[in-house]
Length: 166
Image (cartoon, rainbow, N blue to C red; front, side):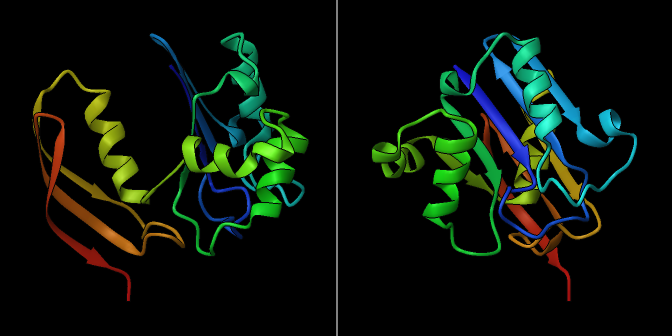
């Protein structure tokens, strides 16, 4: 299975968090922040980590049409199918115009900001059970939580508490 996770969602006005990509191909993982490749954090010409994405494809010998799942943070606004066509059909060329609705509903997954932190930490650890805490400056437009904590037992997260930005 081939999975790509991109932050931020390419169609949100999200310029405060590092732009990054993680690609998983079988037992190999590629992960990169665009700022490490560019030498600066924000780039008004690009709203997502295009350099990291294509470097990851090259490193893992993948093409966009070979990706099974595309993971993004929960967007601020409702997903725009025309923008999805531009991204997945015209730019990445990983599906056809006539198949975009099916492609998006079956292969695009949105996850909340802090949930992504929690699952990344847990699944990259050697543990089967854990108490877990995620704290940062406040999530993003799709997740206004500042902190989230809970337990993971048998790979299922049970939330015990959370705090929100005001």
